Image (tube, rainbow over all chains, first blue to last red; front, top):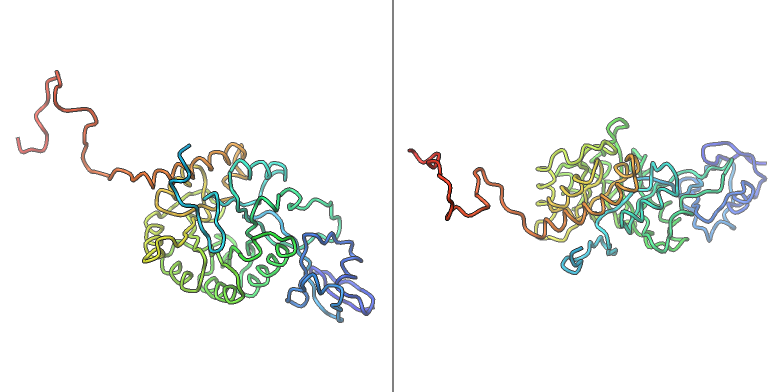
Length: 67
Length: 283
């Protein structure tokens, strides 16, 4: 297992987990989401082949109300 | 309603809008109410924020379930950002969401880089810097800024698609506190470029504020709290729509000048009444 940070919280995931795997693991409704890995956007097309390294930081975001 | 063909539409970069009102989606009591208010306002561009997806207890309701992405062009904001890097990150994330959902708003952003949590005043230096970075990255940048004409000019020079001066602090409802600054912003931004879009964004409290902004010559108004937090948001959304049209028509109609003295509206000849001696004529 490796330790990663997702949305500010620590998570343990199996070594070799990809972004797509993580989203599935966390049961995220991905339709309206975007993902940032170590401060760079991971395009949706790259989710399934972007692996996560120990200590990496992810943001999984969506749109919400705002002015 | 007067013919809308007697006015050109608002053009913001690559986007042509049907409405000169841009409405925010925050602070509504319910998503259903938000949906109704957006319709009542007549807006075709609406703003949204970018925030973390709730990973625990995703009740399943996303604001985008209540927004028709075919009907509205979404304008993501960088609200809550206090430095250049964060604003750029947020803009890119918003773009990615709209890209995969095929919304035309995937090429633009409402840039806010704030300096202070109490006043929510923009950081002028960081806003100019972030604007340049985002313009280089292919964004059409609509910049939230103060009513300082010099900063407004710098933002235009930095490549902003539109400069959006605040009337007063965000959510404060004070309307346009300094119309003279807005006038100078308009003058500076539209010098040799009369169609450069200037949009009052922030501080609108009620319908007359929208009309006032349009009468000053602004190309549009962006507001959120004035509708969402009104006692009857749906009614206020309708009022805002009318006010935007009224202010725009009044501008195009060419108002009368302000004069110090009176000019009677009824004829002065043919009166049966006794007239006083004219005042101020040295009698």
